[in-house]
Structures are given as C-alpha cells and as structure tokens.
Image (cartoon, rainbow, N blue to C red; front, side, top):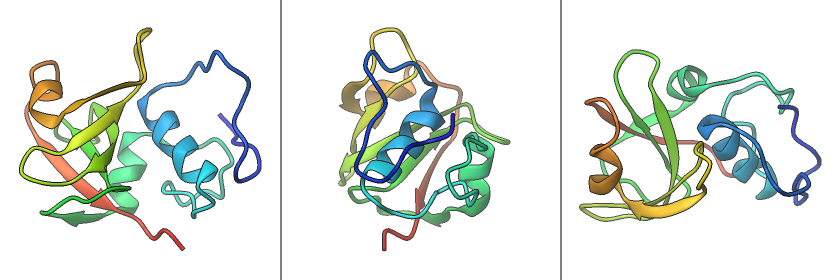
Length: 119
C-alpha cells in the first residue's frame, strides 16, 4: 500500500494488514520508512525484521513481531515495560490496544522487538 505524505492518513475505513498499519503509523509521524523502501508500498513483517535493530527493552514507537522466520504478525509498542502495551491491527476489529501477553495467546511462538530511526 503506497503511503501518502507525512501527517496524512488514508480515508477511513482503513483496510490494511498488520505491517501496513505499522508502516502507516511511521509515515503519519514523519519518520523514515521502517521497510527501507521510501514508502512505495513494498514491505511486510520480514522487511521490518530485516531493517529493524533488535532490542530487549521496548519503548514507545518500537515494533513487536510475533512468530519465527520472516514473522507472522507485527504491532506497534505504545508503552514499554515487562509486558508492553501495543496497538495491533490486521483483523476486522482492529486496531485494538492490548498487552503483548494477550496477543501472544493468538500468535505463533517467538517475540522480537525492533527499533527504527525516528528522525
């Protein structure tokens, strides 16, 4: 999904998957594309894993990827801590706010936290 200019959002209702939602949040914030593709619409959980720096103590604006390999699901961290609060999108009910521990119940094993440049 090619993303519009920084600070703008597509018309609602928004139809996108989890990695598209994360990418859209970064674009709306005016930060570099976490997929390293200049917001041309290319990217998925695997490119987030490829270009993000792995961190062990997530903070707001970090990304969490669930599952091994190229990942299964991505969400945005909005509050750090032992059980970070995240915004998850990619289902008909999304976006939703929940804890990583709650999302893990629905995702394959494996949790990776990623940090991207925000300036």
